[in-house]
Image 1: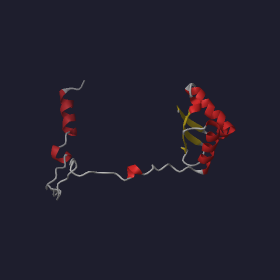
Image 2: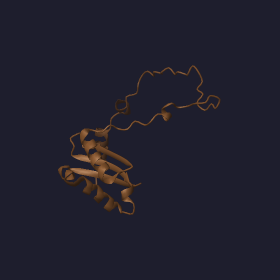
Image 3: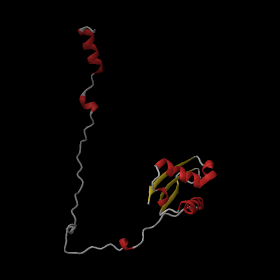
Image 4: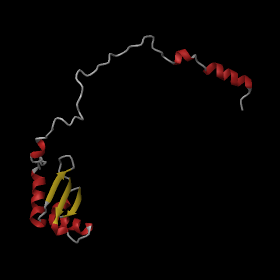
Length: 138
């Protein structure tokens, strides 16, 4: 407990004027506002809009030679309908992410599907730091 005299002395020594703590600007600057010169017609139905990009084939990510070699091995052994191999280690080839969809996975548990991918890759996986395998049934 602090006595009243000590409390008043402590308050006088720590109290600073509010004006010195707050820095209030002396001038106020207003930024000019701009308005669009033409009204936007975003919801208009009078003009048909078509996308030419929708008719083009989507760009597939290009694979490095190591990714292509892994994809080739998996294509030969599991005949996937979809396959994506990505080097997720930053380019050093120590970790890969594999997304694969194959009819060979039908009736298999996820664990067995992943074991099938590991078996298809064989000893190649042993030289990697890690692998992410996502499987789907075609």
